[in-house]
Length: 84
Image 1 (cartoon, one colour):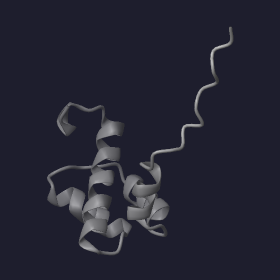
Image 2 (cartoon, rainbow, N blue to C red):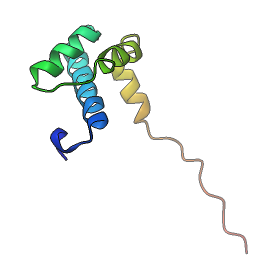
Image 3 (cartoon, rainbow, N blue to C red):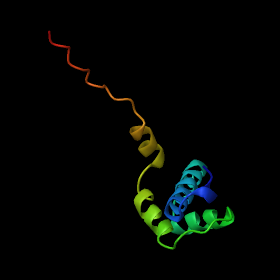
Image 4 (cartoon, rainbow, N blue to C red):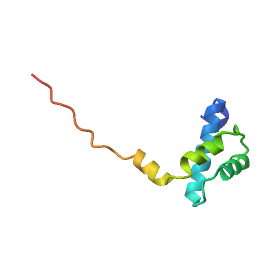
């Protein structure tokens, strides 16, 4: 599914996610202004509240660590044996 096919809210969120990942990958500071600049440079438009929201949420964390911690494989705990 392309960004153009997404509902507006999902489109805006995806644009901010992509911009945040680009900023993180380039080592740039993750700010509202830079997110907005990247989104605009990509030819997209988002509602005004999205860039500050993402900057506020992600600007103070290590995005790489956030990604890595969310993709770690857990121990699983194992299932109990079948009784019988």
